[in-house]
Every structure is written in structure tokens, then in C-alpha cells.
Amino acid sequence: MKREFAVADNHGNVCVNIADKTTMMSSMQRPGRLGTMGRSVPCEEPTGLAIDRKRDKAFASYGNRKLAVVSLGTGKVVQTLPIGDDCDATAFDLGANLVFASKGEC
Image (cartoon, rainbow, N blue to C red; front, side, top):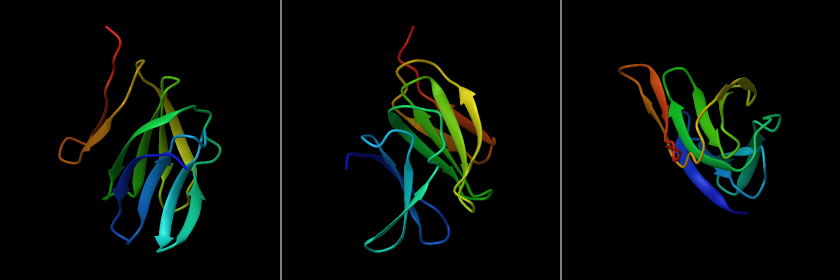
């Protein structure tokens, strides 16, 4: 299992992008137990991952120019958005309520 990025929520969970399991994000709810989230994401090659702890949302960037917004409460994808090519990192600014996805294309 090739792990990419990890973020922690306010409920003791750690969400992890799994790079070799296309379209899958996982959440470790208890040590040694792995639950799955975001399986229905129409995306490939997960890379960056950020979290909005206030609204319980995760933002996962993918190699096929998509960003998935995942509800941490339900584990379901609530929206996908287009992003630039070669994204490797994702960040969330709580103060500005903005999500950022890096881009490698010029």
C-alpha cells in the first residue's frame, strides 16, 4: 500500500491518500483498523490531501486534474472540481475558507 499524504481530523481519525489504490481515501478510525472513504471518486493517482476540520471535509487532489471534496462524516464524495496538471500538494486556509492545489503546468 503506497501512502501519499495524511491529515488528522478533530475526532481521532487520520485520513490517508493511498496512491496505488486509485480513487480511494482511507481513514484509520482505531489503531490497526482501516476504513475506506471516497471510493466513488472518478479520479486517478491521488496526491495531495488537505482538511477543513471546522466543516469535516477533506480535499484530495488527483493526477487526472481533479480535486475531490469528501465528507468526513459520511465518507462520500460531495463534489469534484477541475484543477491543473501535475498537482502534488493541497492545502486549506481556514481563515480565508480557500483550498489550494499546486500545479506543475505553465
